[in-house]
Length: 244
Image (cartoon, rainbow, N blue to C red; front, side):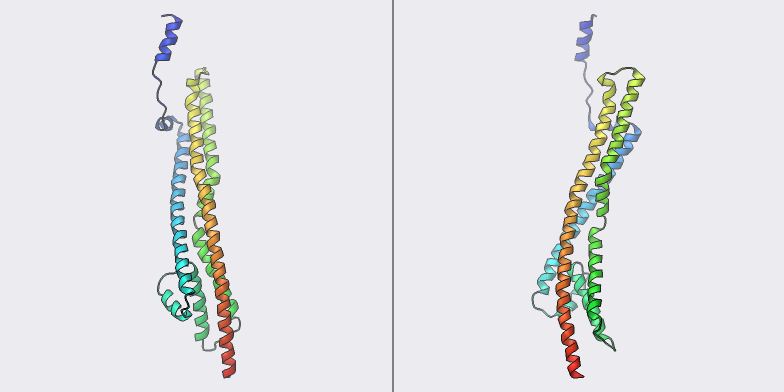
């Protein structure tokens, strides 16, 4: 068989199909660990995205319903009795916390309105902090995945390229067939890192923006309700002074 026939038979030989599974199972154990870690991080971030999206949507809907009830003209006492009977979140939790402080001050035997307004403001601030903390919980996971995944994938890339160079040194052959497996697993690790990082970054920014909007609504309601209670305090204190 001459050289031409050898070349023809080489070209005619079937080429092994390269799939994602074949690249994964043929990769070095270190690259496999990197890929599995990135896949776990991606699944974790998807779970956080779904949970936070549902929570923010539920909180937004609850705030819309409560704002409609609050501004409907019903008395604060009637609304408080209705809302305090069930778990609250969003603006309803601010309302319940402030009303409880208001009622405790009124029911005290030595009730005094000195400092009541500042106490109500502090209660509202604490309630806002708690609501934002619930909304922001686990968002740090998305930020961590978004920032760390490309570097973890890069580590797998470097290791895959090192595998390719070791194959060249062992076989003393620089053909593409020798270096292709190592390069393929290196690029595969890079791709998995980007697949984990990009959605985490996009949804982190989106969810953080939704949390900021919710915080703005809570702070606006706290200012409005604080002004309403301030007028109530002045009216009640004035009535007591006239009675005295």
